[in-house]
Image (cartoon, rainbow, N blue to C red; front, side, top):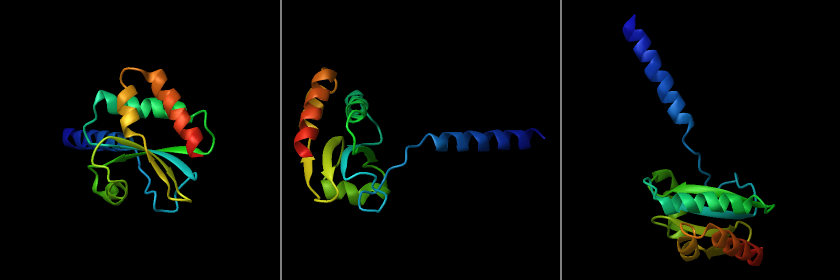
Length: 133
């Protein structure tokens, strides 16, 4: 009886942990929600700056209609095609227009401000979004 309870508890734990994994979207598929996307790539093990970029990016695009945020783990094989398309091998940030295929690399700006000046990050990102539209 104890073995059955342990197996059930293990199963429930695995299911609960699996639900916490963020799904990613393949930008080459038909699942695109908006024409303009803010795409962040990251490695399996994320640093403080990478997490700050995600948080600040989401806060910034919340005030922008028609832009979606997409997060890709470059260490996950299912994201290899899109990572190759953007030449992303680690933490990076891009604006992408699915209709025109235009991209804007925001990685340098993101690393410059995300960790130490969140307001400047959001201001600069908003400028880039406005210019990209």
